[in-house]
Every structure is written in structure tokens, then in C-alpha cells.
Image 1 (cartoon, rainbow, N blue to C red):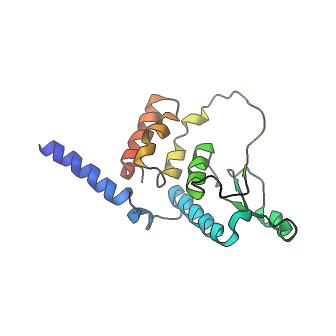
Image 2 (cartoon, rainbow, N blue to C red):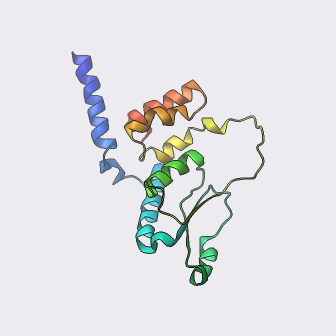
Length: 173
């Protein structure tokens, strides 16, 4: 009975602290999860200001693009370019960013993804096993995301790490 109550307490405390907005409200903006939250909040505010004339771009640090220069054309086109990507992020992170920015999938006039190149090259590393995405999106993951998020990784050890981190966010945060 003591073990059952301890496990129940662990899940209850983790749920209270990390699955509510309590911890994210004091999250360090210099962390990957904090920066992700900051960008999400900034883009939600921009949605209120610019409405449906927004074009959102997502990419990592190699996405050489300037929304400031693109927005010089706003008076002629009516479109406002926004950047919701961040250095070190990848497609998995962008999915959760877009999900929370536009839950009905009609929030933006267009969505632009910055990719390295058009080639489908075989490499020695496996980008689908890059656990860093867990640290970016951890504050946005729900308990219902645990299985699908974990299965998006290739190796069983990383899948377990992602599943466990999604369920018990305190381990990651």
C-alpha cells in the first residue's frame, strides 16, 4: 500500500507542478523549453495584432531569412511575416508549435518551413532519434501525446525516454 501511495503521490505532484501552467509561468527564458514558450507566447500576441494576414515561418538557425526585410513589402501585399522557429529545433518541434498556434489549422495565410536542402541524403546519424526536441516541446506535450510522441523516435531506448519524460515532465524539466 505504501508503494502504491508513493507512486500515486509522485504522479499527483508531477501533474500539479508540471502539467498545469504553474511551472511554465516561472520557466527560465534562457532554457530551450523557456525559449520555446516565449516564442509561442510572442506569436500568439502577434496573431491578435495582425489577424489572418500573417505568414508564419519555421526553421532552425540555418534558415537564412529576415522577417524585417520581408515585411518591407507589407504595405503592398498586406501580408505580415512572422518567425516561430528557433535554433536547434526540427520538424517534430515545429509540429507542436503549429498545433498550439493554430489548433483549427486555419490561423495563417501560409506556413513556410525552412529546410537544409531538397536532397534526401543518407547520413550516419539518425535525426529522428534526436531527443533534444523533447526539451523544446516538453511544456506543450499533453498526457495524450505520450504514445505518439514517443513513437516518433526510432530506437526503443529513446522512445522510452520520450514516453517517460512526457508522462513525468519533472524528469525533463
